[in-house]
Image 1 (cartoon, rainbow, N blue to C red):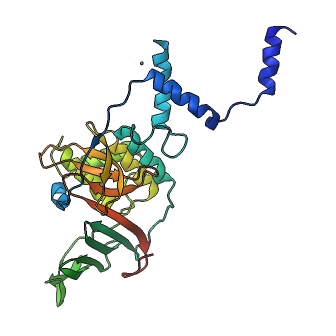
Image 2 (image 1 turned 180 degrees about the vertical axis):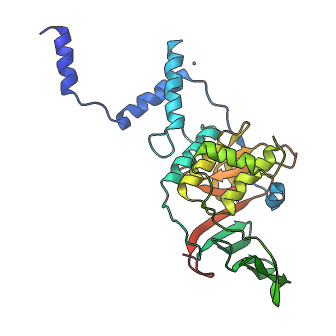
Image 3 (image 1 turned 120 degrees about the horizontal axis):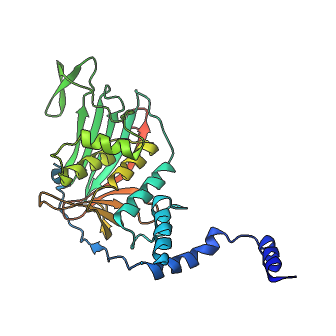
Length: 306
């Protein structure tokens, strides 16, 4: 048997290697052909709680580039093949988009509520916000000073109840526009989401701090279905100047990998914190203040938590 026929027979009788068997060799290839990634910056945890105000390698090189683009754009499993500590900000956000698409998809009904529980240091906050903005919601805040409950009047037929000292004034209403806690009209692909964010920005063009605030608003104060959340992460990943931050904590003290959003106002960077393994959004950390999203769900009534 000549050598060519022998090689052909061996090839037919040997099953192809699995991705798991190839992974170690692929890692060594990438390590040999790429420059080491810059070490991420470590940000100390701070006890400041004013984040809401801040929100106010010549052929080999070609192969390496092709392999790297596959890893970044289409990770073959949750988190891709790049460890969190070496990943850049774009990689982390795209991994977060992949994770979002694997989450359960719940389509809220108009009469339901978005339940959220969050933490800022020792202070806790729970809220029940109307899905369509027409039902009365409730916010409960608990701190060392005590516990307060605040009604959030729904807007029905263009009118909403008037509040005084957190209480409803009987018989009095005022003009209003519904503020739904869930928006079914938000884009579900990255290009459309970028266009939406630009068209609905709250700051001047090029204001990175304002852009970061807008992204954070949708992450913390709105309910987003999986495709919309993934589009938001993909759109955010195109922002210039983002940095991966290692070992940053959210407002509940949970450690994760952060995405530092550039600040154009000198008031400190907004740092979005993600779980280092699942890439789910945890909250906010860094010198600008911190917070943590502990729970979010769709419920049928005020007071219900699951």
